[in-house]
Amino acid sequence: MFGFLTSNSRSFLGNLAQYSTRNDAAQRAGARCGCSCTVVRYYPDEPEGRFRQRPASGYGLSPYTLFLNISLLLSLAVMVRRAGRRVARPDRYIDGAWVALVGGVVGARVGYVSAHWAYFATRTDQAYRFWLGGLSWHGALAGVVLVLALYCRIRKLSLRRLADELALVAPAIGAAAALGCIRVGCAYGREVLDPCWLATELPDLFGVVSYRYNVSLLTAVWNLLLLVGLWAGTRHAVPGVRTGLLFVGWGAGLGLIDLLRGDAVPYWGSVRVDVILNWLLAGIGVAMAWLARSGCRMRRLSPGARS
Image (tube, rainbow, N blue to C red; front, side, top):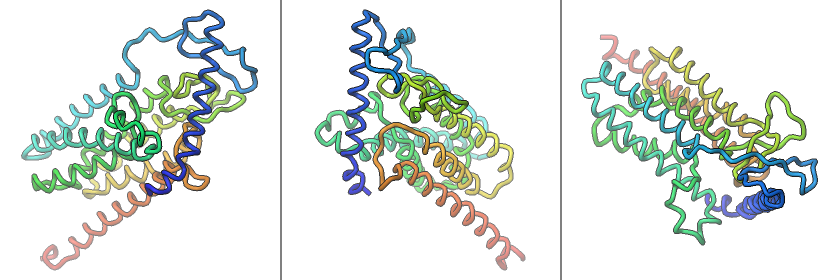
């Protein structure tokens, strides 16, 4: 996988340079107007020099950081409340949530740096600075799974049960992160010439505002639908089924939404890598849910269970 990511890095960096050049031109246009703005509106059908300025925001805290932190605190509170009612040692489940948080942050940064290694190969001092931006949610998910598997093995806990508890709050965190991306532009949609119900004026990662598919809003809505579905439909599910259904929902839903994204990512042929990873995640989720239900059925039919 590393080989094909590296081979497609030239295309990725080309797109990055294109957006950067366009943003520089927009900022020069703003400077000529004497406007102290940080975000400039750009429209594909208008020539350079006719950019429209939007005043800089006066907020010092990024909406992405604010929404994400609030969702993490609320999710931790929900886990504390549920663990106190359902398990004999709730402290171990709470420790598992903190371990998952650390593993998610590390995995998100490692995934982003690996996917864009062509850039970080000559800038290794920036690789660990996750606070500068650049996180991969696929990498975060992989990091959470790995550290939880290790943690549950050391503490002799059920990985499926702990994962199912985290699955009840994970969509809320995903929705909060997506809402934060709307104004920041960290996951922006493709540009469209005319506004429609799926598109509105939004910035990209470089602050250039244009009509784009609002993929962040679609992602947030989909995560909220998943949240409601998991809480309402998996109360008595077999351990492991809830996590599998979450993977299916994320993979299938975000796999379709990501087809509308316009941010520069590596490609495998003509398909975005994140779309391929989403489809793979959906397949893994189907297998997890099927194995969990099959294992429960086998235990019920075993001679020991019948006696």
